[in-house]
Length: 112
Length: 110
Image (cartoon, rainbow over all chains, first blue to last red; front, side, top):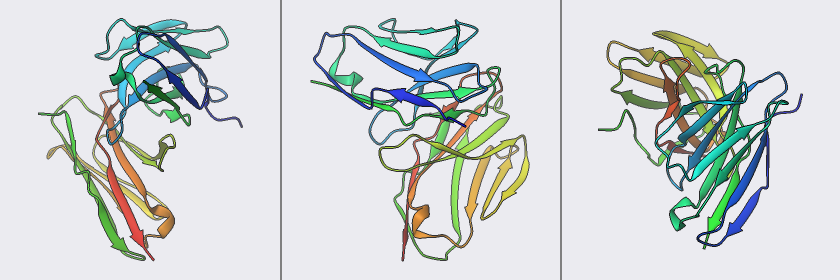
């Protein structure tokens, strides 16, 4: 049973650039949530996708956007990167927007 | 005031000790409570998932929720060096965003 997968594992970008991160949910799951985890902090909720629509959003600017595909996989896009966007980006999947979320290994983004 | 408060530690215990990890929260709407374990540079792993007040046991792990005090705990019995990790509490009102604590770093010394 495949768990949540994310790509790429690591990414280095320059300020002002744009980045796309990808996530495939656990088999049987249809909901994807994205989190940002800064060093030494807990994950912060960015947004959640269900039925290809953004259902909920945390306190993140519009530079953060996403998409969910018919196969339930998802992308997170960040525009106009800032140094403060450097973090571990985590994807979590669940069934029917449920609370029992399973996390992927994360993508470590470094903005220089 | 943060919605979820968690002592970041670090907490060091000898192998075999009983570990107690705790979180307090301020949002009365929270009904679902989770504990995650996160190893360094890895994604969080779901350990325990509980609804409302009460206890739940799974092997060496016991989760307790006291909604009247807005206080949740995770107990680890017979702690092992492999339990060394950061433990994150998380909670939600249900079908809403999940709010995490900062995480407590635990070190179990052989």
